[in-house]
Image (cartoon, rainbow, N blue to C red; front, top):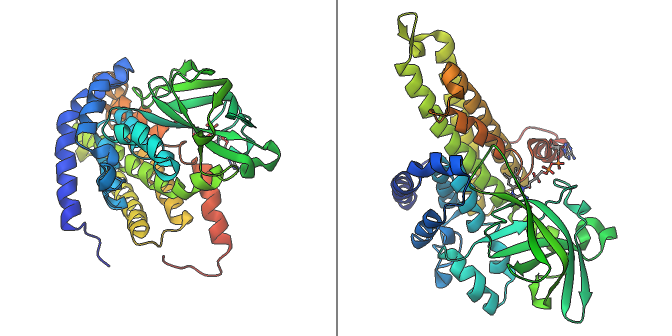
Length: 386
Ligand SMILES: Cc1cc2nc3c(=O)[nH]c(=O)nc-3n(C[C@H](O)[C@H](O)[C@H](O)COP(=O)(O)OP(=O)(O)OC[C@H]3O[C@@H](n4cnc5c(N)ncnc54)[C@H](O)[C@@H]3O)c2cc1C
């Protein structure tokens, strides 16, 4: 067993960490307070090529492995969860369908500018009445001689206010549930496509979550990404990668929060000594340290398995479940260590506390992930280390 990063991965980690702590971290607070999309920052990171981390070099990508993408997610979250939500959407879910299923024109028009940070992409499957249960979506895609007509509403769509293109889930056959779903590429400005309400939220601010409305929105046949009825399978094909990426976000946030808690425990005094010297505070630090380390091992193990072609859905589910729950645990303990100041705007502890909640939903809730893990466990007759 070798748990160390390769020379290239270590170099990449150092480079990304330095770049993001210089470029992004100083704006974490203002992104949170203003809740505005940080356009300049977005472009700046595009110029560094990070949005193309998963894509091959012939289209302007970095062609990096899953471990490197996880490193990027972790470092983004250490700097700012709001910005990390924006950047990781651009790296993966917002652009991946165009990469896999777009024709040459669509790749030129959407994907290549997106990799450079000149266009913004997002994905829309969640609806007002339906999140985890993808098979229950109501947005319809009706075929006609000009392509498809989309009708329905989406909610909670990251960057929905600023996105130049959206990959939208719609059903051509509601009776087939998951088997009826297709994903359609829709450009901003297409007649019948508009943005509705913004959901004001307490977490991952800066990455606005929007309602999108499709009112008899005519799209050409080439908008269908891949084949009719295969959308759920296509999404499933990248779901483990999404989960590992979010596990990386959890890890980064937990580490940032931990450092804030540790520094505060060293400097704040009560009863004539630093609070970090009290055993009950030491116990918090020890618990957090162990959970972060366990999250790190599960997350990078899953990324390593992905890079070696032997990842199972369970491994990715375990990484996302554990890392995001560990982040929630850590931010809670860090808030308590700060006492009343854990609630004060002037300390980042309150931001970490709010931001960790965002990690629990996208890519599958903890309940859904535990269901996946349990299903696998139920098939076994003994404990296997894999
Ligand atoms: C900040 C943020 C950004 C987002 N961005 C996007 C985006 O860009 N695009 C997009 O399409 N969506 C986005 N989402 C939505 C996200 O994908 C959904 O929140 C997620 O799929 C869960 O759906 P839901 O919130 O409707 O919860 P529901 O599915 O309604 O679940 C509610 C509760 O019931 C539990 N539950 C549901 N089913 C089961 C079950 N079978 N067994 C046990 N428990 C169950 C859940 O675990 C949860 O606790 C975003 C969400 C957030 C918070």
